[in-house]
Length: 181
Image (cartoon, helix red, strand yellow):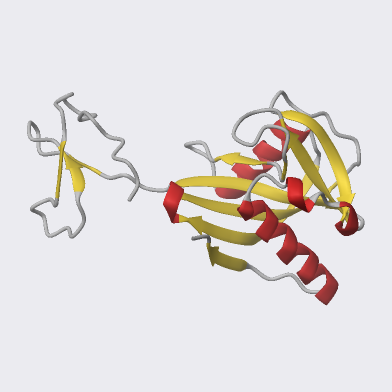
C-alpha cells in the first residue's frame, strides 16, 4: 500500500481522516470530517517516446535523481492540460532537444507500487542533432548492440526498449501493455 499523501482537505483545510466513504465506495479514501469532501488519490502518468533514427534509438543520460548518470528514454510526468502524446513530445524536446514526428502509442506499463502509469510512443527523429536540457547530461543514438543495458535507469524503459527491438526485427509494431510488479 502506498503512503497516504493527503493530510488536509483541499476545500476547507481541515485534517482529513482515512475511511471508506458512506457513498457505496469500497476503498479507503481521504475524507474531510468538516465538509465531507472525498479526496481521491490516483496514479501519475509518465509520458515519453522511443525516438528512432535509422537503426538506432535515442537515449538520455540523466542529470537528475533518481538514477543520476543512468540512461533512459526521454520521458517525464504529464502536465495538467496536455494529452499523453503532447506531453511525450514536450518531454522529448525538453530532455533531448530532439525534433520528432510522433507515431503510435507503443507501451503502457502500470507500476502500482509507486502509483504510476508509463506511456511510451514511437517517434521518428527528424534530425540526429540534439540540444539536451538541464535534466540531461548527454543525448546519444544507440544501435541495439550498443545499448548499455546494465546502465538503463528504469525497468519500464528496459521493457520498452526490448519490445521495440523485438517488434522492429519482426517488421511490425504493436501496442504492449504490462504490469511491473
